[in-house]
Length: 396
Image (cartoon, rainbow, N blue to C red; front, top):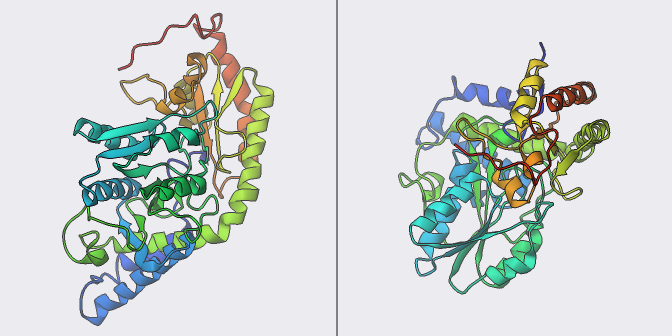
């Protein structure tokens, strides 16, 4: 059975061209890029090329790129660095819908004595910029707000947000893991100080990422060790991964138009087909300010996990928008922040498309899913109730 992969916000297939470029650096070209000899030096040269490719995609200087192991490390580094560089400032601003890489760190910092403001969102997952303005204080060390939400795809007005924050002289970081390679992003015009990305979201391998650090931004390393990354991140570089990330960034720039035309058209075909065919379906996220590859739908009175199991039997890979994990049936913190009713929140599915998807794959889901939802609703214990009548369930 062929796999139909609609979970590209979780991870992406390594592009064959990326793998081809990485392969020699696992075997023949294994030198340490920090070595003085020619054998290692040729690896160092390839690392410099990868850095230039990442910088070219982002619109920044190569020496403003620090290679990391993933998006989480980039986000953690940005936040810890901003706080450690400004020890007299103990306030952090972020949102209620951040990825755990930011949200859980912010909650950890709150337990350690920092003051954290979590900004709310409206029913479409959008921020109130007046609430942001009101949250800024003289002792605010950093504002950290994601570029695009990983569950709903809602894209925040990051250029406007950065302008607001920088006008107060406060450092600004954005988790751009879901935005890079999907929508245009140019750090020559975006006044962000720090920006994190992850390789495996843009068809590079897992285990590699990058953090943009604008020149003259106060910086304290998170991983302390040798002189690698100009002393900003110790440890021998993940050479094949970094080379793969560089190639993936080059390809992402070349495919950016297709992401916003071909992939968007497939996403819209899927979204419109399902909404038209299945009654009581709700779109989660902003109707227009949204990543071109992402659609998050809630189907009333059914469980998202049950839908995923039925789709899996067809070879379709998607994700539960409720982000439930083993031992917990709590709905997604993103959907809760948006005020999505209980009877919808538990039946949420995220489809995230990519450039390897086809129209035939979309049509299969549009053809099969209405029957799955109808079958699940027929046996749902909540089918005769309404939001007010259904009590919250205990969470594990």
